[in-house]
Image (cartoon, rainbow, N blue to C red; front, side):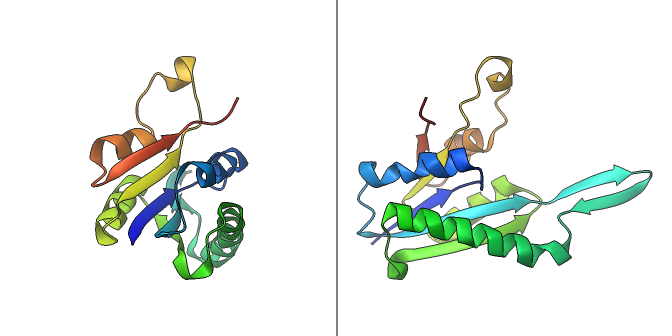
Length: 146
């Protein structure tokens, strides 16, 4: 069986874009990993570090994330036996996904772009750009619909 990894934010436009995958790829003969990575941010507030999210918030965030990922699973028509859903909390989303793709021996990673153009799209430091450069497997980039 193939291993397909879907990287998603919890943004509705990203989830809607990934729902279109059902029409483009045979998902019935693969193990589908739906992954959400929450990036831990450290801020300096009045000379004291502030970390978001805090460890106390992890379980609530993970519960909400898994509910949204479950909705994506149903929209894709993937059976429970062929699904792996994970919510990670990491300082570097890029390094975590690169490690995860190698760990599960992924055949394909799918991500949705935000469709930024003009000055917003000028700087190539996005998660999708990282995947296209450093992914150990094939990458499918899905664009949002207009």
